[in-house]
Length: 198
Image 1: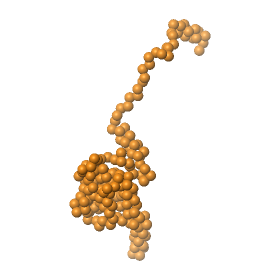
Image 2: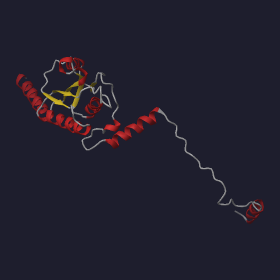
Image 3: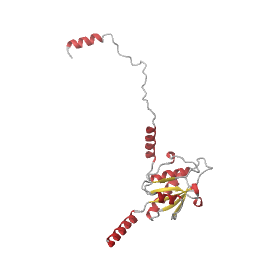
Image 4: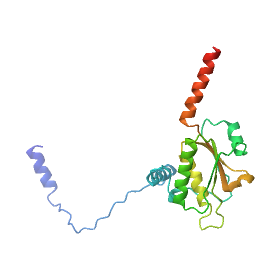
């Protein structure tokens, strides 16, 4: 900046006075546009925070279902015929868990341990009885929790509300993955069979 520029600047700014600190200031507010994507990301972040060490969401972040809603879920890769047999109650139930009269926290621990135990003992199909909770302050609370928790456990391949003889919409069939040891044994047996025929 030359001396002429400085003089011109001082001349132009000569009658300008600085604002006093007491001048009214208008706080600027950041406008947040509520979009469906933003809401989904917020909910997902809240659920991540809400998960405990077992990886299961705590009660306040559970999406609620109705007492008589049918629960159904299958992972990609589960064949339609397999899921249909599960839905129709055609698989032998090797293990059962009853959540009646448990708190949400007790139920969460029980569901987590039940799935671990089933996997350990190579149980492929289980039944969880959660009830419908129709006359409760929070209808279908344990049912809603079960619906959410089973989706979060990688060992669960599929689940579906039970047939009437097994508890109807107050219970859920659960199909589990093979445990790693059984999967390895099956691969070895299959491989030996191919070598022998070859």
